[in-house]
Structures are given as structure tokens and as C-alpha cells.
Image (cartoon, rainbow, N blue to C red):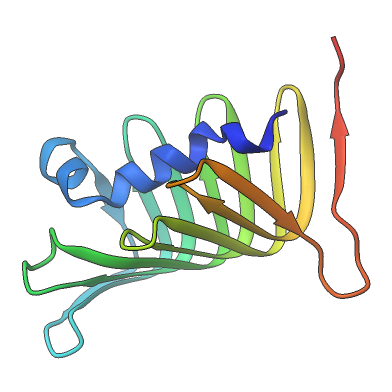
Length: 152
């Protein structure tokens, strides 16, 4: 598995970018949904499931912060609580996922595991820089990043 080739991450980012939301059907279900105009947040709480043609996301809570352009002007996206992102090819899990379109960084933190048919990587944090196409796995203090890979 090549960590810098995480198609899952690119799909995840496309899922929450304004053009993708405008052009692609996205199904979201949760126990509750609140739009907070004062803080410009769309908050999905409880058993959140997001279904997109190319990726599914599960979390206990999802908060999308938007700008002056309204809910299609996403400034940041945060999923917390048993976060799982899944495509046909791979799965990523962690405690928290944060994406900010402005800096093109996705951070998946807390007990991170990314796996596909070629192997898996375990870490405390995964940072994907979409501008440079660099993925960095980090361990917690005193810990190690571990991986298991299948060779051909």
C-alpha cells in the first residue's frame, strides 16, 4: 500500500467540496440535524451515515462550518466519534477527521487504521496534504507507526 496514493482521502475531500455537493447526490442520515445560522454550522448528531457514490462515511457527529456563501460554501468539516471512511478499495478509521479546503489538509487522528487489499497502516495521526500529494503517518509520543504489507 502506498500511503501517498490514498484515493479514499481524495474522494472524502471531493465529497465535502462545494462543487461536488452541488453536482452529486449525497445522502445523509442522523438522529438529529441542526443548522446554526449564528455559528454558520450544519450539525449532524447520532449515528451519522453519509453515502456518496464513491465513499461512505460513518461517525457519531459531523459538523460542517460554512462561509457567507451558505451551506455550499464549506470552510471546514469535522467528523468525530468512531469515524469510518470506506470506498470499494480501502477503509480508514479513527476518532476524528478534520478537513479544511483552504489549506488542503485532511487530518485523521486517534487510533488511525488505514487498510486495503495490499496491507494496513496503524498510527495516531494521518495528515494528507492534497496540494503536495504527501501523506504522513505519525505515532503518539513513545509509540510507533506500524504497517503490514503484502508483497507481490
